[in-house]
Amino acid sequence: MGFGFPDGLHLPSANETRFSSDQRTVLWVLWLTYGSFYFCRNNLGVAIPGLRDDLGYSKTEMGTVLMVLKLAYGVGQFVNGQLAEHVRPRTLLAIGLLASAALNVVFGWATSLYFLTFIWACNGYVQALGWPPTMRTAANWFPPAQRGRAIGIIGTGYQLCGALTFVVAGWAAEKFGWRGALYVPAIIVAASAVHMLVFLKDSPRREPTGAVAPQLPPLHAHSLRENLRLTLTNPSLWLVALALCLLDACRYGFTDWGVTHLKEVQNDSVSTAAFKYAVLPFGGICGALASGWATDRFFSGRRAPVICLLLLMLGCLTLAYDFVIHWGMGASVLILFLIGFCIFGPQVLLVGTLPVDLARKGTAAAAAGFVNFMGYMGAAAGDQMTGHLAESLGWTSAVRFWAACAFAAAVVIAFLWNAGKPRTDQ
Figure 1 (cartoon, helix red, strand yellow):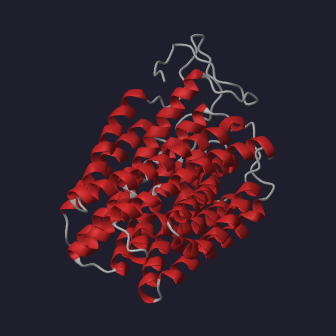
Figure 2 (cartoon, helix red, strand yellow):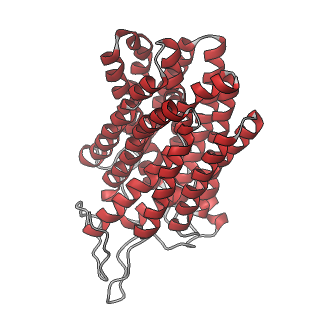
Figure 3 (spheres, rainbow, N blue to C red):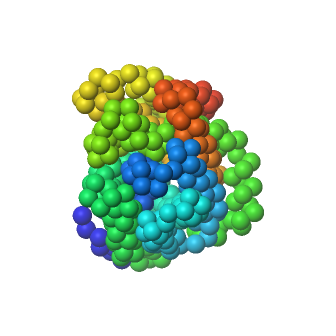
């Protein structure tokens, strides 16, 4: 993959479907950059069993720590979605990556529950510096006819890195203790920040003639007040946001609590449980690619039918999961792969493609930030509810809660069945 940017470049028109060489370069840099954030976000789920054994905290207390990251991340998505319309994406991405790496190291030094909670909340906010500038850059480079595939490909990056997080953090926890699951990912994320600063270009360069390839309006196209008004008065975005809110409660039930669940229900070691859960994001890679491609290829840019179908499948698979994990390694791995497919297929469309499609002109990053804010409010509530249900009623009740959230999300998104067709004004 080359990283050169020629003085003149060509961006395909809205009706072209093939990516130019410059688009491919940007696509893969975004793929790696945003994906690397997950090394310092999903790793705590692997560290929790050892942390609880070492420091003696309950599931409910750990649920609170997990919850505050989602709350801070959600607030950060809303704030940074507006900020990304006014500050260069490279700047925000660099700050987010380096600060998250540093906070993971600090978390590993801490022992007090209050300090752990505060540090993980701070990590949640700086993690939120990732998605809005990524979407801003993607919207600059990819017209609507290409956006489903482009964002679907970007989505596979955080699926793969999510899978690698379980493997890397699981290995580090076994070798260095639970703190290793924080320190090793921090090194990877810091290296990714350097790579991004060297290779990422925020938007297409000008042609030698002075003409600019078609793209979204430049930074500062709207005032902060106007961005807020255009975003919050868009009723379609509220439905997308509610659906993502419910889906993320289910999603983070699996990713934050899955290793602990398997360790307690099946008496697995941390590394074995983490290895099984590494399969879930690989299913997500397939889901992200298939869902974005299907909406562009078969539904003329309508995202809701694919999202609704996958959410219904997710609810059914989640109900089956509580039984299937007792059937052995092969069955556990297979159902986790399918669950990953049905989580991240709709998640990529809800968090990126559909908000950008439905955003009013010049507010793509703000729309993505608002929807992701609502998603993480659901994730925060879901983490707390999962910890409470698992401790007071047992894991079966927690898993049924995840399934109920998936079914409810399917109902909400059905109201947008015919929405989301690409528009030429974006």
